[in-house]
Image (spheres, rainbow, N blue to C red):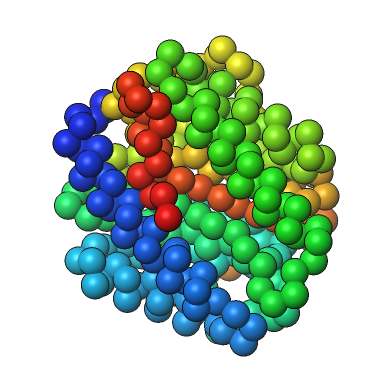
Length: 255
Ligand code: MG
Ligand code: MG
């Protein structure tokens, strides 16, 4: 069962979401050839600290994880899809980077992710990132009262599959509120008209994860966290925290 949020709670969640938005903007501005993933983590951490927010990522240890997550962002480069741990790795010309960030402020969580290229972009990466953004927009457009979770999943999946991309199985969006991960799961592929009915006051994180080769399979890297494509092809990830309202979807992490 999912807690329905009041308008005042959604306004409070917007404040948490805006901290995430500012952190992602700062990371993107700081990113470039030669910049390390640990430096990007520090940029995001500075934004959270300045806002008086804490990180729901730092120290997070879900059931599958061998160690608590050590950073405030996930930084997933090239064939890493999601959950990349920031390391001393320095970004190279043509890298494709996905940054996921969360914030906890005033008792509420926000969660958002962006993908972008560094230096001279490969045309294939530009198309992949643009499609990930279109998939996110399509999912958000379907996040309206009386639709169902399956309508969001179908909207995302249709954009990804039509473009020929793979979709990560078993991972997707989620409800969000006082905690970052709440019910219901929001899959990235599904059947329209199926699943939980959407109601005003629901808040969800919508997050397409696309694999360039069109294959869906992936594996866990030796660090126990990073999920990578099996065939080495590149991946992109976009995410927003979205409130379902009578007036339509409200993007709480909008930049
Ligand atoms: Mg996220
Ligand atoms: Mg999320």
